[in-house]
Length: 139
Image (cartoon, rainbow, N blue to C red; front, side, top):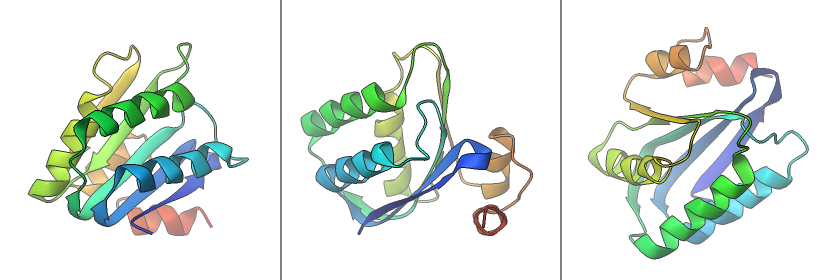
């Protein structure tokens, strides 16, 4: 599947990774699975790795509608939400920029994009310097 997730409940974090071509339907399906997971919590920090994206479905109206549905499930007005995109390629930055912009008008939403794993993890308040270390320490 082009998108997968792993919840790290002790870190109040979900790690999402895209591979290949990202589609609206796959993204929404994965998010619904995440939202139905017993470890899901609204407001969990999101670390979204788009470094392996080779393209994405450019169905902008559907994408924005999907992002609104996701915000409705992931966001609570009484909590802030922190979303960090790891984007190391032009296509990844483009996709992350589009997704991040959909949160611009949401009070309490903080969206960042970066190309350094350690810096993004530090912004999330985590001590690990790589995603591999983070995921290994969560086992």
